[in-house]
Image (tube, rainbow, N blue to C red; front, side, top):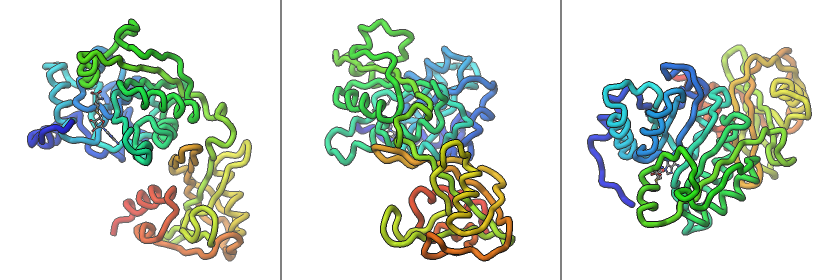
Length: 357
Ligand SMILES: C[S@@+](CC[C@H](N)C(=O)[O-])C[C@H]1O[C@@H](n2cnc3c(N)ncnc32)[C@H](O)[C@@H]1O
């Protein structure tokens, strides 16, 4: 369904106190944005926010972030929220423009999200290669795992049978357990149900709405090999340059540049892993200083969780290329000029942004 352009949407959003445009800087500190510290729930692809406005108004003890990639629909969501709240302050709802396919750049484990809502996301059923854009595809589910609390819930509604059935498979492969399921929401008696714009449309046409609640099982309970934990060292020298190493030919990411590091061993944390890996790969000891954040890079069958550790060289000794083909000390702002492994790009961009000339 194509929506007519809404020229008023962007100016109204720009003037709105509870709207955030591309809010990457709020990652890990969403709680500070609200009037009250209370549980956080996130709605993905909220559209015109018909259900969002009612849900937020009727649950003042919960903070909600409703996101969508479309500014025009977010403009409608703002109007719907305003209409629902009337003169009362909208202090437990934030509308945010972002692409859910990169949601890991906007939310972190520290945000402790307790519930995610996805209602009537685009089914992408026409071409197999488009499946990965579904908001319930493993590529996205692995990212949700990175900021959803253990035991946190995913609430998913759709009219589309194929999407619903495929989603059941995606969920089990990514460590979610389905706790509630109905193939006819409106006859199920489930309450409270906040009906979205699309739900009202399908219900009026007599199309049964499929609904499920899935719970995130802890990482430790994931099937072996599904989540590979990796640490990478962002090593800085006295001139403020950062070390990049280039992989040799063959294997994943052949000839690309990366921050040195590797897989965590059982019982090891990211800092200890970075220390061990750098000693093995480059023959020098590092002093870990800070854990910079975690990126989840997802493939359909498994995911790589990459934790970056800021570190300094403990001893000046010469670095040896024991596993890599080449190394370079690089000014942070120049990191993105290198052909990087995809999982390192986000961290390189963040470091480059902090090193503006
Ligand atoms: C079919 S509408 C459903 C809207 C609403 N949830 C409902 O049930 O009425 C799907 C919404 O998801 C949004 N969307 C699709 N892909 C997205 C993405 N990658 N990131 C953010 N929003 C997305 C679209 O802009 C659209 O507003």
